[in-house]
Image (tube, rainbow, N blue to C red; front, side, top):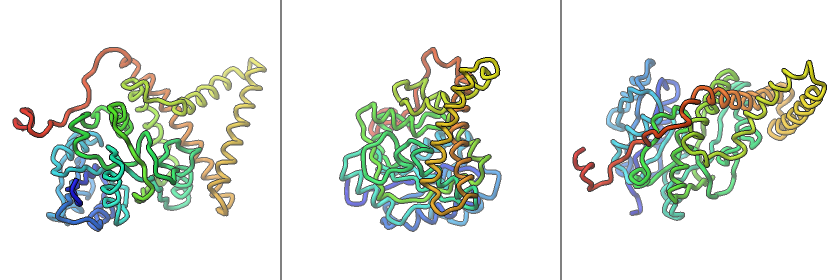
Length: 346
C-alpha cells in the first residue's frame, strides 16, 4: 500500500433522514486526502426525505439504489461500484471521529490484518436510550469484544470494518440471504480462509442505538433469529455464549409449565431466577453508577430485553429455518478478480 491508498466508504441505509447528514458530514470531515477518498451511499428505496438530504451534497458523494432494501445487498452494490483499494463500511447511525479512516489504514498496514474496526461506542438519547447504551456497553449485555474491549487485539468480528478490496476477491461478498448477522458470517469466512480481524480502540466512532425498549426487543429478536441461519451455514462459527439466551428462555418456560405439578421444577425455577436476577443486579450496578433508581431499573429492563429477545428469536429461527438444515445451497456472490475473463466481461 502507498501512504494514502484510495478508500471507498460504503454507507448502506434506508429511511435515515434524521441521521444520514450527521454520518456523511463525519466522513467528509476526515483527516484523509479528499482526492484519495470516495463516499458511496446505497439507498434502499427510502420513502422519507433521505434522498433529498443526500441530493444536497451534490458531487461530494455517489448515491446508488438498492431495490432489495437490505444491508448485504447494499454492501455488495457499493463494493462492486467502488474504486478503492480499501473498502470501509460505515453505518448510517454512526458518526466517525476525524481520524477514523487514517487510523484504519495505518492499522491495516501495521498489522497485516484483513479487516480492522473499532469499538461500538453507543450513544443514547432520553431515559430509555441512555439505559440501552449502558447495557450495550456491558459484557453482561453482549459478549462480542468490540462492545466492551479497551485494548487492541485479534477478534472474531468488529463493528463495521475496513477491508482491503482483495478480501472480497478472495472469499466473496456479503451473503445476501442474511438480513441480520451478515458481518459476522463474512468475518467467519475470512478467518476460516486464514485471514485476521483486528479491533483497535483507536478507531473511534459513536453509534446511535435504539431509543426505546420496544425497538431494542425487535432488533435483538432479529439478531437471534438470523443467527440460526448463520449456524446452519457455519456450525463451527458458534460459541457456547450463543446458546445461553435460548437455553435460558426455554428453561424458564419449561420449568414454569412443569412447576404446578412438580415440586422439583418449582425449586429449580426459583434457583434459576435467583441466579439470573443476581446477575442482572450486579451488572446493572456496575454500569449505572450514580444514575439513581429510575435509571437502574431501565438498565435492568434493557438487559432482560436483550437476553430474552435474542433467545426467543433464536428459538423462532429454529422453526423458521428448520427445513434448511439439509441440502446444498449456493454460496455468497463473488467479486471478479481484476484481470480475469469475468472481470473483463463486466
